[in-house]
Image 1 (cartoon, one colour):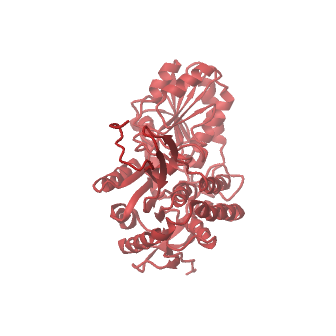
Image 2 (cartoon, rainbow, N blue to C red):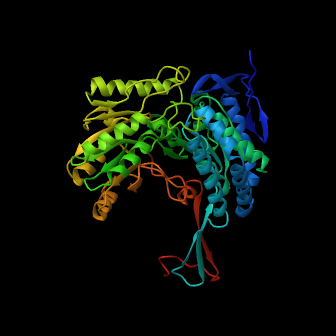
Image 3 (cartoon, rainbow, N blue to C red):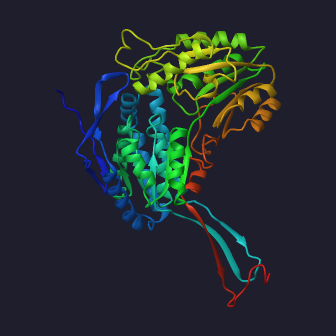
Length: 497
């Protein structure tokens, strides 16, 4: 039997085995014969150890001046940039998406690290005049303590960076549980943090399942805040776990995002956007363009061109630079996508325009490959219109006006991202105002967020908090209002004013 590298947990500045003595395999979803490595099958005991260490480390880390914390983050960003190619290849091997996309994933971590390093010399509060004489008032940010993080497999370095970097620059310590499908990318990230001088205990990595590691993490009383990205179902459990003790939680959950294609749209551009939005990352994005709402005047042209482009997509191992779409991340996810393909064809009665099944044959037999799939004649009452599929499936729904398109677009329990293709600035602004989502694009697909604006959604997509930009600081810090009276006497606000 071949030997594989065993990766360990990172607790108290050292790489340690799980107390369970057990490990699990991480395999390449494009070639399941390839074992990437084995990782610790951790338990609540390991989580308890990590939290205790992070709690102790917080006592010193919170007192490190924010600009000095930021200098470490800046060095981490430089290292990420230097190692970008290696990190991208590792991510493609464990997650499946193509090299251009994993390179973009790493770049997002680089961007977020540089951005948050800059916040170390900002993190501005406010000063404001008092209503009383000889009195000064200001507000400052203060750290919270130990932050627990549960991250998904689809952006295995970008999303951890959205959480870890603002938490660190604010003065918190971290315990992170990565997705079981993609622990190597988080391992690589934490390894770089260690090598660039982040003090031991400030960030702790514990791998394992949601039940054995995620549950005790979210319920632990010494966790001040939980930041979770994943399904709405699990997000609800995170919210309930934190609610009893009034602990903070940030939830980034599902999406069922729409592109509106109006009668005056540049159809070629809209097709390009829909193709990238629907099938980038094999559709495994919370921002994926899974609903295409197209004006009846251009729907025939748009459909024909999109189907032709989808049929021509090259699917395969993401390490091949000519490949345009990789596999589903695992067997379970592939089966979920195939189930929705079957629902669209049989239960919903939508018109299958291309795809609709698993790719088989040479080059596909050892991976979880699904066809780029498009359904037409989709109506808002269909399952494939309403439920998040998280795979290589998109649908086309006809509309007759901007107002109807907006109504159809808002007909979902989610509210993450939406977009419109139009040449009419009035239509663009009306859709911008009326589509109830946290992110909106004009003449671009529903994917492509940048790190210096808030990221998150409305309704069942989130719970009001945002990642990225300065909005991330609002979750990972608490405001403290400070009043300094130098009058030498008691002054009673609202009474002596």
